[in-house]
Length: 56
Image (cartoon, rainbow, N blue to C red; front, side):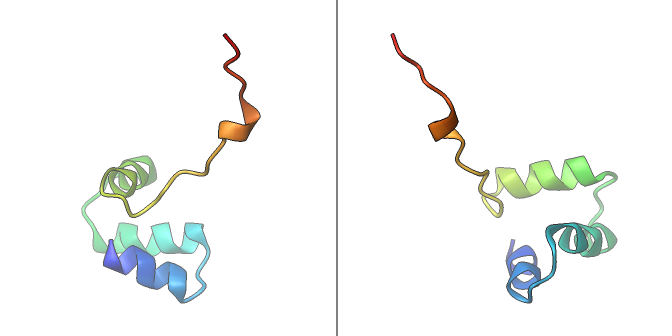
């Protein structure tokens, strides 16, 4: 998580960051790494709640 945040803070693009982390971790795919980062809270998904209306 700290490596991800430091890469982002150094103004690397998200794809560059994921590429660098793929070289450092044992994840076999980009999707697996992204899911891991989301699970540990390193990546917070964008809020899309304003795009949906749940009018009951």
